[in-house]
Length: 214
Image (cartoon, rainbow, N blue to C red; front, side):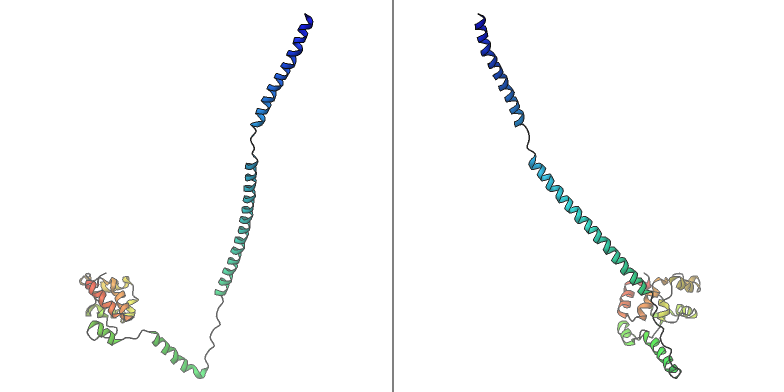
């Protein structure tokens, strides 16, 4: 009886051991099959890292180039400033024998720098003969106001064109309340067109602005 029991256990124990080993092998195999292969992702990240390092290196090179360009620009600006401060040499003084000729030349140059009055062009634009520096040609200025301006030293179109609105108003106020209706705001502008010979523009402007008002 004991011998038979021992034979049974001799069969059961190896079967149990084999079964347990099979189960353990299965479990270990299942776990190993679940391991994820990340080699492709690691390679991709490595390539991206290398690319970023290269871009960073290029950016550093660009920064260095930018700094150099700024330094060159600053040096150029300094040269321009230094050149602008150079005082040109004074012209040689004319000899005593040419003093009269030089004075005549200077007077002629001053005269030629003024704009020449073209009476024919003015007559063509206005349909009547125009006298040079006639302040009455300015819309809003009559004989009385012209006299007031001449009494205050404004006798030409050029002088009137360079007068400020405040100056014109002060001269106008010297005539009393009767001249309050006049507006001198456009007079310097009209006088400038007279002085520069812009007759067609002046005629057009006067046609569009009643009594010379802006």
